[in-house]
Length: 82
Figure (spheres, one colour):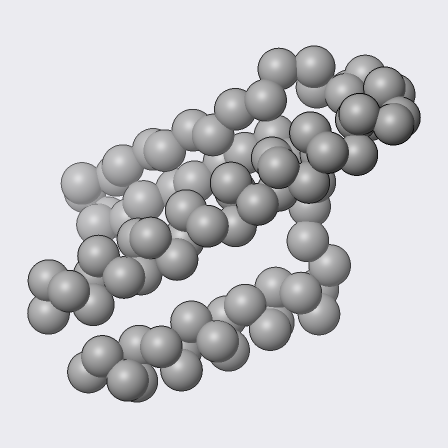
């Protein structure tokens, strides 16, 4: 059980890190990419009352199709662990 929770946490952190890498890379050739948010960040907000973890980043957002692919692959990983 602990292994699967850790796996979900690692998977959940992968997207924000990837989003920051993408905007940092794109800003090398297009400085305007950082005009809206020059400081890159990842905020992790625990909510013990609701047992949730909110992860907010300043990177480039995902498309709806990208989110769906990610959640499906995360579910498949979870099935393998359980």
